[in-house]
Length: 591
Image (cartoon, rainbow, N blue to C red):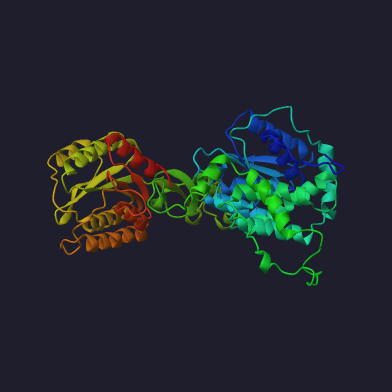
């Protein structure tokens, strides 16, 4: 690899191995996002990285739901009780100083845990201020985030992902002994020693920044991380000056996985508008290498970046969609709230026993530093092993997942209402059949004639739903705005009760009754759009199902309503109960 040999790994496994070598050269305060299920490929990559790191560099594994005292350090309870004075113990971040922290199931780590790791990545140290301790510990680490997410939106926290230079996907990769020549640990060691002397030309830095902009990379860290990778690639080649091949590696590993749009082709300059280069004086401050064409350099590097884009990403970008999942909105299933009694343990806080469940270990941990003073002060109970006071009580907080209330808002007008309502009734019964385990509820709003009404209040009772739905009428005008207004009011009430509302609108969008109860399609559609925007402002999750058999495209009324609500749009002209319930469940489970 040294001696100026070109580094262009061809197959996926060779690229993954080369990424391990690049990361091992300059691992601290950077990282790798490794998207792969547990298996031979992931194990082989981690073993290769371990071989590339210095023998004395620690490589620690952080489990899912790691507690703060284990991650950051804190009071050594046993040692403190024995010594009668506070004894601190270092956490996993400090223990990994100078090495690599491997995050298991990184896509499930909380944003709070990610924030602590990110702080260590940024500062290279941790400020310990807990359990009566105040200390500062070195924590210059690199991070490998093991991403086992299945869906596109199952990713490690964005703040952490932004600081990880290389994003690898080994989902379809199998380890192979043949192919690209292995980089030896000795070559990594030599490159690491050479790294400080590597120089990057000004036009190379400018090219990385310009390419990040052309790929729609909005993070300012991405070009900086790309520069680090380019310097590592240069050092691995045995060179001192970053060249095009190094910039291509940086674009492939750092910028391409972050792309959110296809790069626009370079603008062609008309011959009659071309500047007269013969008369222009060169500017030494802006052009370090007059022999290089900046545009040609960017085109070469961006071609390498485009080659690294996965085919499905190209398809999504071509369709005009962003590669990133939309930001989570309040109102989606999976939203959680802090509970004093139920759910998954989150952390502990000082509190009274009536406020929740006592955390015995944390209570003892809070009391431990003061034992010597309390024994001196307390003559009444000198034989107590541990003196605990009310200020020491620590209460466990829990993260409780909220159930979902699916609110069906159904167009019950016109001649097709009877068939449509029958399918909605079937979908509600299908959802109620298995909602008990998820603590989900279902409600139904029907709009017809000149008003909307709650036919089925939020319920988990299948028998009650069947009884109320049996006599549900249909026919008349389409007061769509009334239906959406009532849905927004009901969703607000559901949210206040601690449930997560999901509004599923089923209509052909042909509103003809306005809010005042007067007929007229133009005014009715305008009122419906206003009501839809109210749902959007409230932040409720929404799904718009277009049941019209003839309309389609951006001009379809239901499409306009969906856009106003920022809802997912689904066209089901021949809706059936099973597909309808599947669509609602998909939105409830998804982002």
